[in-house]
Image (cartoon, helix red, strand yellow):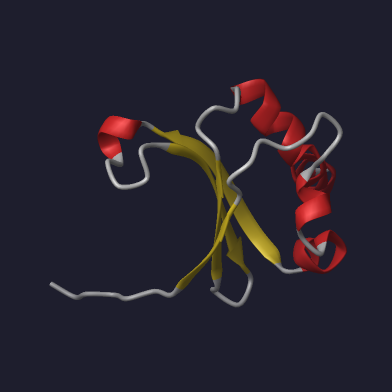
Length: 97
């Protein structure tokens, strides 16, 4: 069995974003999107993650192989997470067309 170790950078957001706040407010969005290969948004339940007691995660994989994990509060609704990620979701939708 081969073991692969990968460094993952992480950004932890402890507070729920304001109504009009998006991921573009937290990161240098224009520079970030140029280098993103893929993204995955998902919820990790507290029973599956006892240390963090659950949270929303946004995993971004970069073209150079780097990884960035954005952790959002578990108290956010799915709708709020999608609204926060809207600029990134739109970027990928537009890129696909």
